[in-house]
Amino acid sequence: MSKAEYPVTQAVRFLRSKKIDFVPYVYAYEEHGGTARFAECTSKPEHQVIKTIVLQDEHKKGLVVLMHGDKHISTRNLARELGLKHIEPATADQAAKWTGYLVGGTSPFGMKTALPVYVEESIWALDEIFINGGKRGFIVGMKPENLRTLNPQDVHVAVDA
Image (cartoon, rainbow, N blue to C red; front, side):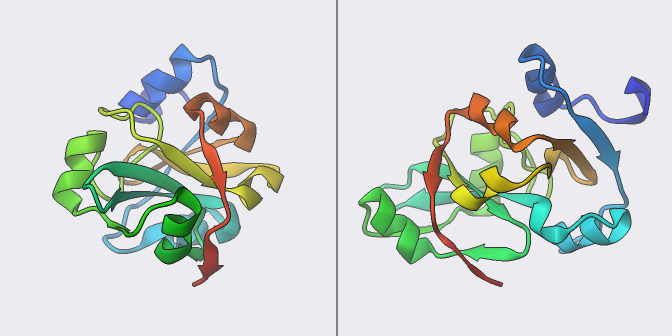
């Protein structure tokens, strides 16, 4: 795929600046389609499609969790692991303000505000991941090791969807 065939987002600029190899995937975005939509369009396993979830703690401070597409986050377990009382999803407006991305197009790369990033530890065992490239309908494929540029902390908070 040529450079002209995919959007040059803040995430793409970040990946290029860090010299991170990625494979772009453009697909027909569907409202509320989530990771299942990309998996369906590309025949990729949904377990390898990584969600970027923006949350906030009891102090209204933002954080990002990277999770398998076919799993949910236990916010109760996450709060315990981080020594917090309460964690909840950020509103769409707040998530956009912190990240600079619209919900459905949120990438952990090139966020407007540097938020702490937490990675479900089982993601590291995957051969390849597919994660949002900073725009609805745009995913980048890469090795999970490339997430290390975000200085993430490992967590174990996945629960079955």
